[in-house]
Length: 149
Image (cartoon, rainbow, N blue to C red):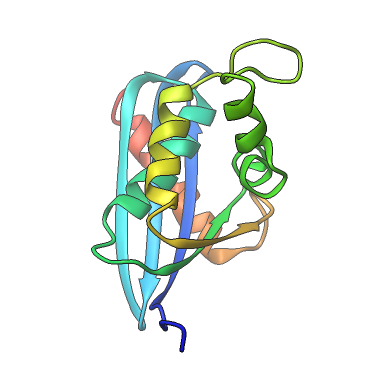
């Protein structure tokens, strides 16, 4: 009999005013009808770093193994996990297909640590569209980035 994991919905987004520039991230966790909202930022970051930080922070707060459905508008993050990019980068010593180093390796490694603690499904959402929950985390990320302007 397989263990039944609690299902958590996680929406994440990152924002940057300039790229690089002041950055922010937002995460919304939904479990059992309850919501937990998280946000933060950095005075000097990039959009990709903030997208990654949102996923890390969302997973980091979970206290036990869960089935996490991560919703992100970051094609980079979704593709890295669903198309085997992560495994290829690791096999090649954190080099991309063009032999250049993978950017933000430390964040990828941190994200992998948290992902490996859970059963994760990756769901690509269209950014800046009519997805209400994605728009909420986008707003959180933008507001967090504005604190550093």
